[in-house]
Length: 309
Figure 1 (cartoon, rainbow, N blue to C red):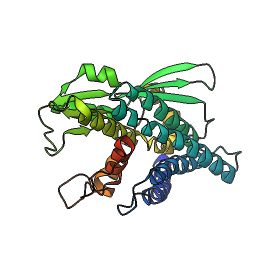
Figure 2 (cartoon, rainbow, N blue to C red):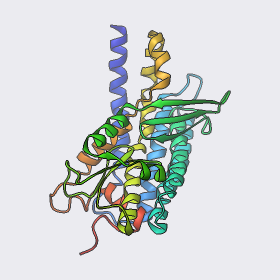
Figure 3 (cartoon, one colour):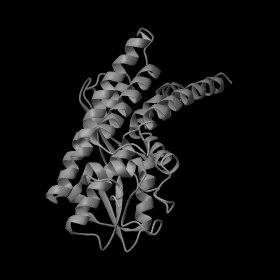
């Protein structure tokens, strides 16, 4: 009963903080806003700052003052968000140079910024833990003590990969060039109006889209969508108080949790894309007004989701 009441209280408190977080960040996603670098830069840095600040407050140690902890988490998170944004912008090189190898670079920079945001949200030193995601595996390096490397399984990302595998065939050559799982099919069965689709940390491309400027433009666009799935990963650390209590009660969970990473950011992206942004359906200009589609297109090829008519 005590554990149940504790969990209930924590969940209510978590929901309040999460609602506050979403209201502030999503306020930058107005469909009527002018599309420009400043808008997207503000959005990305504030995701990092707000996530870092709230997470740090949730994970505050008893001897720390709340306002200092909040400020530190916010400032460090801002820095991480700015670096992650720089990683997104590097995908423009994929389109400009027509070279998928730049995907490795953009992911490295994005992951560095994303790692800093996560460290801020967990109330740790900003340099203490770094990660690089490949498919549904998170390659994590701890350097705050003895250097330790741990591969961790991401269940939500795995679900996205399975979804793509069911709808297409694995493209090994493209995957190696870009460092991102890529699948092929004659058509995108679940969205026939699309030539490519992103499901978590991987892509599904139609077979006819395999070369030329359109292919590279689209690949750069989809890479940014992959990063959008990861940009809310700081909220995973909002659950630390709950998981820590679970570890105290269950030695088995404590031992196995080391190899698993709860990627709730996957679900956060789906809510944002399909509910907040209203997805990509055929309603008048719904795709054109989707903030996430405009960000992906603007940062990759410097135009909006729909060309001016």
